[in-house]
Amino acid sequence: MDDAQHLPRIGTLTERTQRPRSVASIAWRRYRRDRPAVAGLIVLLLLVLLALSAGLISEHVTGFSPTQQDIRNRFQPIGSNGYLLGSDQLGRDTFTRLLFGARVSLGIAGLSIVVALLVGAAYGVVSGYFGGWVDGVLMRIVDVLLAVPSLFLLLLIASMWRMGPLALAFVIAATAWVTLSRLVRGEVLALRQREYVEAARIAGDRPVRVMVRHILPNVLPVIIVWASLTVPGLILAEAGLSYLGLGIQPPTPSWGNMLSDSQRVWSHSAALVLLPGIAIYLAVFAINLVGNGLRDALDPRLTE
Image: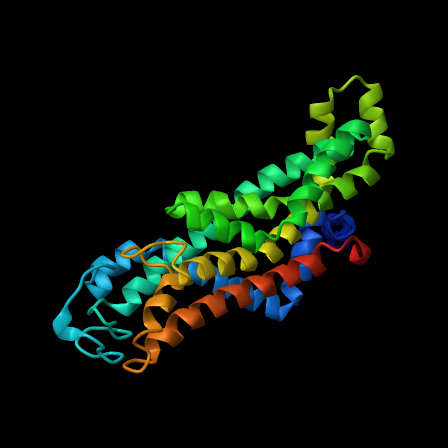
């Protein structure tokens, strides 16, 4: 009687162990084993959480707004007079400005990568799927854009127009999508000859449906890895433009213009240089760790 009662449990356990796992679950399991990647993910989520909570922290913790000035409290040291990370040359709270600067810098990078993904992925899928003269024309346009240094193009556009965060994000995205389109196009050229794609065509599916339902999901791992490895460069691009005075303009804080402002007063307070530099370093390093972890987790050669 006891043996009979235990048989269903054994059968259920066997079924669970033999149940095939999805690609996402396998990738997540592999990603969790990569301790540096997990640490990078934690740091990145913490930075994003602080950036999203900047308004609440400003109101309920620091008590300062990012543009609030107090000349009487210039260059306050860390932890003095209620300034958690000190104050700058205009008496503004450095911690509050770092939080709002994170919102601007990470927000610009996030919006840039979303626009670059949409444009680059669609461009590459269309070019690789149709091939022929369509592929030839689209790829010649990409070749022309790749021949122009992206940094030079960014500096040229930024020097001609004063841009806000939204415009700057689109300008950065305009130089980032090109490499993704070429990468996606190469993957689609290999995928369009697969049996399931040919079967969908024979079944009468329209090209848009074939691209969206059968090709794009198989290119998604490549797109995710590219995005995770490209975001650090976008953060540095925004920081560099703002540092040169061609990006986000004061009084709106960003990590780049905080560095630019502090270079003139570093002898009074080295923390004004170190803190935004450390913030940029942490964000870039954390995203690089996440990107490396995703690359290893989604590598088809390691699929179990």
